[in-house]
Image (cartoon, rainbow, N blue to C red):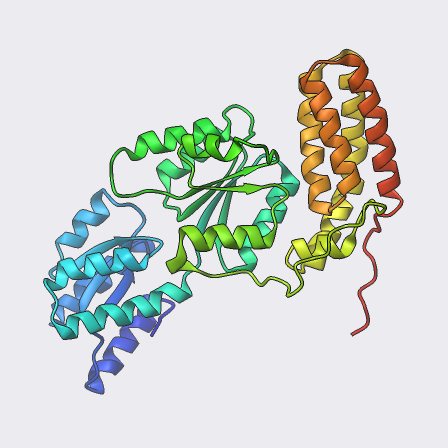
Length: 372
């Protein structure tokens, strides 16, 4: 049974006692305003409600909140978000070596907690379009997402807050995903708390997976992210927290080579989210003129590093749209820029602009919804 606030919880506890069916355990949020959670826990003990185990849910694993929990008899502290394994460990410490009643209580608590709580995910991604796609996919699965746009912010977020999973872009400004992961792992030390980190990269090249693993990452997803790939990695790393976003029955047809844009395949890759694809189409129409101007300026000044940054972002956007031809042209341009070949860069730039112009004639802004 759940209660939205302390007043409702008091009513539920009283009603259960009156019906001779008291709660075996109470999970109380220790971060409620004005210490309401601690006050409620103390009042439970003062009322001689000795049959219940109290668990106070804290935002940190150390500090005064945890110490205050220990001052309340037969009360434990557990870090939010609640994980089934952590809950079991904390309950066992309070109950001691369990007999059947205690084991039954633990099993019932695990069943009630695990299916209902989505993951708390940190998304480290500097591209706004990729952020939007990943956030929408995760939220549709019931997960909570916090977004940061560079490596230092990712390291700070993990240091200050508790997450179940990190999706880490390997190419970010200031500090890339590889070094950010190394710093997170160094901070973890040899403790038992291992935070799963999944790499996101636009380069699906031989050796990329090994480089990610060497940096301390646990998984690898190639961009553009598909709902199926995301679900698969979450299920593999956190099987006890499985909460999948719905995938279309049809995995999505492969785009025909003669078509610059296969809307059906793009919708399928986004998990059937037509509204999200409409947003991405609108965003590409709005952003491409500015990005094209930046590409031309980088070409004019010979700034290949700037050109690579812009075309890398465009590759991600084109991949999300399922625009295979334009995406391949962007990859060719990025490769030419990385090899510092002026002639190849100009040829690749001409080809890329031609491909995107062709694509723009097929990208439809906000197509009408089909009749119900």
